[in-house]
Length: 446
Image 1 (tube, helix red, strand yellow):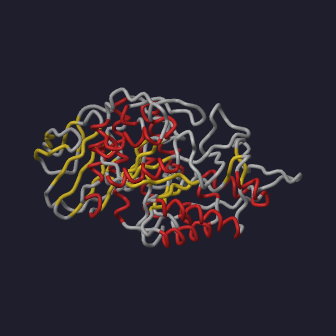
Image 2: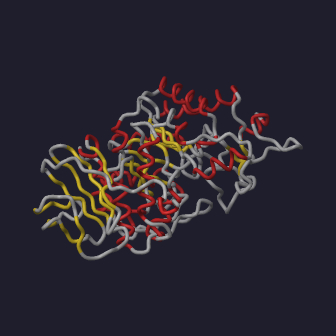
Image 3: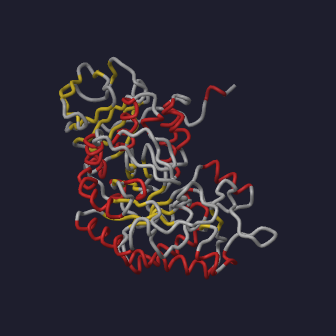
């Protein structure tokens, strides 16, 4: 991880927006009008999916994918003008919000400004035609790194956006670019604007191996942490999804969370979420609404920054298309109070100063943020069990931060919540011991 990354980053709440589908007209002005509501949730950063013009050639869908970028220096005129975006940034800052934009430096649209000016900066086939190294991505062509002139060009675009007021960069498929590029970019941006937050879309572990076997250099999460503040949770995402759907035991996923804690730098930050623009909505993935809420609360309680994807506060089941107008059905924001409680939870001092320990996997996931004189105790009923569960809390009555209700612990037992409970305690509890879950399946031993 970037050596200077602060533990404060673990308490950030991000909110992902696709301008095209966010408001009635799909404009910066629509988003600006919604900023007070978003801020009221407790969001720190608004992350905008790419705001740049989209290429025309080989488009997917009617309007094209925002990740097929035609010009890194401009904004998509469908959303408004550059001045409109600058005004949006100013409004966000006035409300106490910071702005993060998506940058896509692995590939461009087939008809991008860059391919017309510098075709030599792209991967080419035997006939000299620009190509993508990922055949499924037919609407883009890949930039070929490292090239000093290409690096200079891209770094200048980052400096320009930082100077305009952008506070963070979400870097698309960051694993596919050289580490040297990201180190140079971070340093150069800091010269223009110190304190910019860097979020890497690190890729699935299996894809790292696959690309390396094909002779395509690809960075692991451990390497990316040298340049980035926050990384995606994709290294263990498939196991998490399988735990949500019941295809894998929950304990296997929890083992991998423990594994992360042992292989990354001590100040590592993962971005925890239950959905994003590339993944199914949690309300569609989880077997029940209560389990969806339990997993959402768990990811907020887990160590790391927290992401909400626009529409999550509506309990949406549909993931909007990237390629056409596909508006979110907000339906009165029924889950906004729940997400607001989770955002407030991230600001609890225990999540900054405490020690995070996973205690059990069944009948519910239990974990604690422990401090010598108090902390937070979480119970997450991700398997929709009923009845009582043992807890390592003294008998008494506790305040549940999620429901605002009182929860009674008697004889070391409490009733399982329908979804989740997070209990505040002030007692001087002994330091908790993590549950024992071996990282290898010992049942296979002779």
